[in-house]
Length: 243
Image 1 (spheres, rainbow, N blue to C red):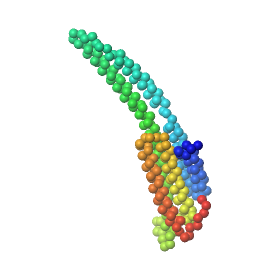
Image 2: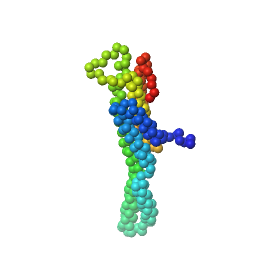
Image 3: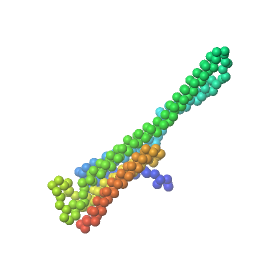
Image 4: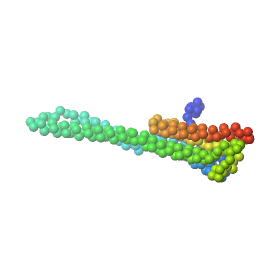
């Protein structure tokens, strides 16, 4: 039971996103944000399956590695069997043949050993590429969420602010704007949690660095949103309501 709180639960992340999608759809049914959250939800569901699949062994790689291990052992026995002291002839031909045969066996052992090392490393490389591709998608989604809140400027509620002809058209009330910004912040936080799913069972430096980058990005973007929220909440005209 205690171990249940030591790792992120992908199902809980998906459930939280499903509730968030319903909340956004009920509050802003025709907004672009209601479509973005569905994309994030789709990625979360895919991450739930992808993280589980990546944790499983890649059996074809391991089978090939096993065959190479058997081949390497067999070549080792051949090398040992070939290490017999040759009977030197007058012209030294038997010694030359012996050295050439030994060199050939050693080269084969080195080649098979290098192939085995490559296969052992290849499973990690395949999984790294899969995780980095998924993390790149999450990074892009974080920027998409940021674009949706970019023009949601709470300064327009301040007295004396006069919009220009090119200013964005604002139709939200202060309360609606606060909910919109809060939904964006929640979504960014959940994107960071989806990224962390890939790092739970990985010690690959590239994957861990990519996850940390996404978590830093989503935290910085959320911080900008909360600066806007503080302006909204500090307005004397703001009336808080339930989400």
